[in-house]
Amino acid sequence: EEKGGDCGADFFDSGNAAAAQMRQMAAQLALDDMLYWLDHGDGGGRGGGKQPPQQQQQQRKDRVAIFDATNSTKARRDWVLQECTSNSTKRTGVVFVESICDDKDLLDANFLTKVQTSPDYKDMDQQTAMADLRSRVKKYEEAYETIEDD
Image (cartoon, rainbow, N blue to C red; front, side, top):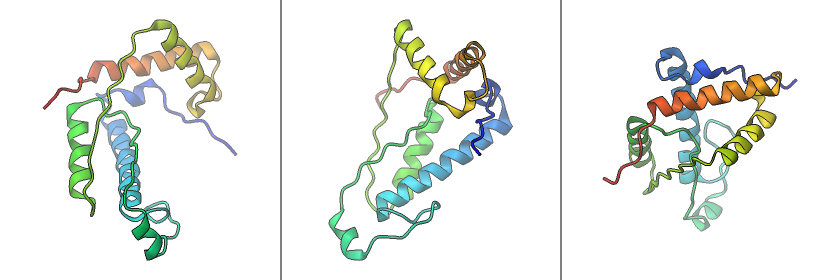
């Protein structure tokens, strides 16, 4: 049975310590899996699966992964950088991409797609879901720190 996400906008409030701990735990698990895959190839990691034979592993030397997470603060980006450079057996480069959009029509279209496809909004009417998503975005904007060249 498919279940909704059960994550209202308050879950994304930077002042909600319990939710911040859960978000960090989820990020750590995802990052650990990504780093394992970068080091070892398909399978393994926390998600299970089989490690490829040594011969296959040697043929696949270069890999690219995208850690699609809300790395919206300098502290979070510093954590990602530290994890990627100290917990990987291979040299791992890190690039942060900042995408800024202030096109209201494009944002509205993206928000509509999100509320129509996310399990978090499965059992919500569209108007309530859009209001919740806008509230989530506002909570992220309140804590957001732009990427600086350093």
